[in-house]
Image (cartoon, one colour):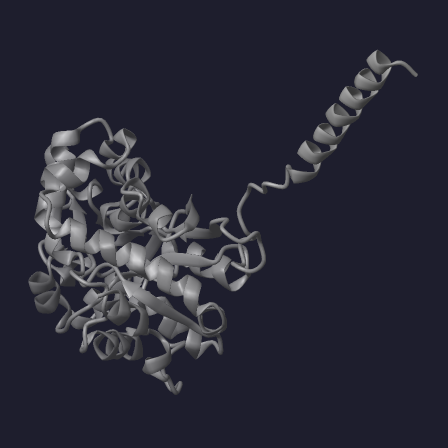
Length: 353
């Protein structure tokens, strides 16, 4: 073999080795971990799915805002927010293992324990309901107080939802049992407004921005206001922490690192909210949340900013107050031994703060 052929063979050999080396070193892995938070590649984000009982409702605003602000990403979490009709749907999906966490009303954790199931609030988003019992303008002349709701058709998000619990509590305080009213599941937003316009409901419990839409259009009027901690205290004879993020107790105990990251993200959002105006907060939300009227959305948000927790902690008197209402109004809870300490935890919010 002459020198020229030797050099050619050597060059071909070098190229072949370089190609093999390049293929062998291409081991970069993409993608996220499983929704259970386990396994996955080192450095990859942990994927979590959270079902929210109405993403466009302002009481649930911290969920989407946390994603919009990038705080989930900062904590190494790849979070999918799933929109559902109510917090009760979220609760059922968490129990079934279809999602990792849910966002709904705190009272569900008490009701679940009465049924032998364990769920706990890991971060409290709202320290008051941010709801109102609205009466149809057509019925406002004859329905002037909660006592006048006896025998009426009352709208709630879903049967068994937090909106129904709140309505029952108001009725109870007025001396009316829940079987003396008729509850209809009508959702929120357009479906709630349509139900009132069509006369299918005489009154109903709903949230912002639906409340402000009813007021501005003249379709409804406020009968009982639960949009601030003060008005809630007066209407329910006690505090009522409402929307939170809940997870199964056994999941929290076995995934404390992931739970801490999740709570860190939410606490960052709550602190951010308390240092920014309603206009600045609204500007971060998806445009379709405004329902075609951003100014009205901002006005509604201003009226209920006080409901959002400043730090994510469960208020000290909250669990007992909510439990008292459950004992008085919910037959499924009456007579059951409830360990309130397992229905919530401030362990993660304390560290986040």
